[in-house]
Amino acid sequence: MQEDILEVGGIKFTSRLWVGTGKYASFQQTKEAVEASGTDVVTVAVRRTNITDTKSENLLDYIDPKKYKILPNTAGCYTKEDALRYARLARAAGVSDMVKLEVIGDERTLFPDNVALLEATIELVKEGFIVLPYTTDDPVMCKRLEDAGAAAVMPLAAPIGSGLGIRNPYNIKIIMETVKVPVIVDAGVGTASDAAVAMELGAQAVLMNTAIAGAKDPIMMARAMKLAVEAGRLAYRAGRIPRKLYATASSPIEGML
Figure 1 (cartoon, rainbow, N blue to C red):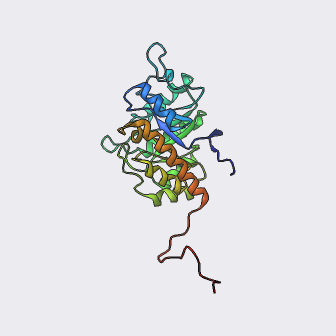
Figure 2: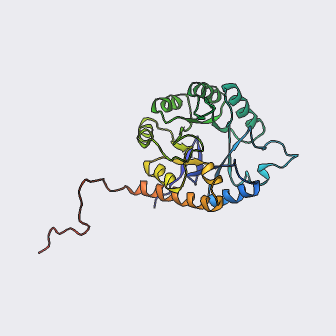
Figure 3: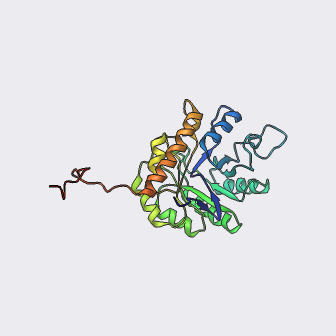
C-alpha cells in the first residue's frame, strides 16, 4: 500500500488523529491517553495550560516535545488581540511556529468569530506563523482563510464539547471541494463512529479533546478513536460502493446455465 503521509505547512505527520490536552483528571492521565491514541500531534491551550513556566508542574514534563509535535492553540480568546498575544507568547517560549488559531465569538455556543479570525490569520501569516484556523463549517470562509495564507482549515463538526458528531456532512464535502489546503475536522466529535465518518468524507485529519478526556475510560476511548480514524481513512482510500435504491446480488447469475 502506498505510504499515506499528511503534510501541513511543510511538516509531515504520520497520525491523522490529533488530540487535545484539556479536561483530563491529571497530567499523568493525559500522558496515558495521548500514548494510547497513537497521535503525533498534541494541541495545548496556551492560556489555560502551563507550558512555559519550568519552575512549576508543566505539561511538557509528561508530553515529550521530542516525540510529539506540540501545537499551541488560542482557546479561550474572545478577541483578535488576545489570540495574537497568546500565539506570539507560545512562539517566544520556543514551543512552535505552528498555531491552532481560535477567536471565540459567543460565550454560550463557543462559535468562532470569523471576522476576527480572518484578520488574525492575515496578521500571523505575515509574521511567519503556520496558521491553522478553527472556523465554522462555512465553505466561503474556509476559502477566504486559505486565500489569507492558512496552512489548513479546521471546520467544526458541531459545537465544542457537544459530542453531536458531524451535523452537516454536506458542508464538509463542499469545503473539501473548495479549498486545496488540508481540511481537519475539529470540535463536536462524540464517539468513534463520528471520527470514522469524518475520515470517510475525505477529511485529512480529525482533532478532538472532550470526546476522549470526557469519556468514562479516556484511555480506552483514545484507543477506539485511533482505530476509528485509521479505519475511516482506509475506507476513504479504498473507495466505497455507490448507494443504490435496489438490491444487487452478491453472486451474479449472468453467464450461468
